[in-house]
Length: 455
Image (tube, rainbow, N blue to C red; front, side):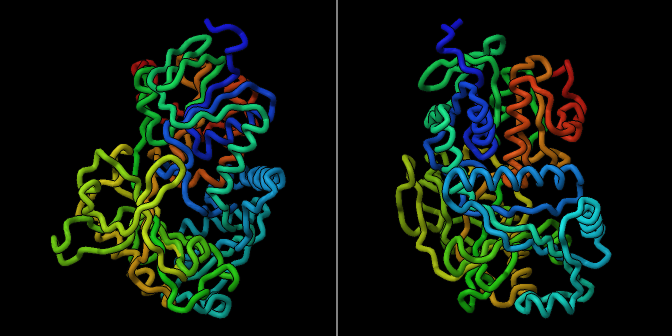
């Protein structure tokens, strides 16, 4: 056993937004904490990079809406501590057919929880947002508390705060081995650490760490491509024009949610994510070949990327890793598809199947039919990884055998906004405190086959 001076209260593996908020809460409570990250910071290999995320209270489930009350408070607290703006209120516009059951459920939840919102008819939507076209029967619900979180600024603010509070943030340290017990021992590429508790917030790499501990969670890693669409008239969909974030529920022709943020991340580009990227191949390999700038991590294991088969335009440096950066056209907005294709996180940038074209086309038709002031072909793609559970609810729980090993996983593409409370819950679990929230929806026991047979 290490000497007492070398014994941490907690080790946190994974410095995405969930791990950062966990370490932040630990450091806030004067615990000795070390945060380990396998990549050099900042990086774009996981689920927390990029400049923006949507924040909202609008959920079908009461428990998420209830958690968001405290999330808004902690986001505001972090913003005050950092002295920089991390959030902008724009409103969130939910769009769907009048009879859409999910839209009705969200509206009922907002009413039940006392969240200020407004139901908008097709005519009211046309008057308020004239650059949004609706099909017959489509209506809207406006969650007035919705807005944009500045994701990259939030990560930097948290990492700075952890250091300021006495915690350690160690990047470029991949975890090679975990020895459970008391204390728990973690061996990385740079050292060996011991702690009273361990918190794993490793995103797509979670099961790689858990398998040697005798358990595998039902997690599916998906690659989502965030698409940016050029505005025909600069500023048409910008925050300055009071354009909100939006979420389309069951809108034709998309079988999954489509969401978007006002232009601003890249001037004049609107963010509308889509699940897989367009078909990447050698030029002339097919009639549907897209030449779209693609922000991509340089992945040596992907020969197609190494050969330059992807349409990349320039090279640049970010942090201590090399990223290929395209020249970005101005005046674009973002519209995205909340779904994706299975991917190995180590080969995220490798070309995908032909089905990828179809998803770009779905988004293109949506943009053409609903957002006429955008060009219907994306100007830029950025990849992002989702780690989904079967029911798309989080896993916040202790290991069934080692109660000083805590797991936060499966954030399913909607965890960023909730990370202040997720981090608080993981801190409480790691310190064996009574959780502030009912964790029944987040227990791993809700999935069959994760009992003793897996240990």
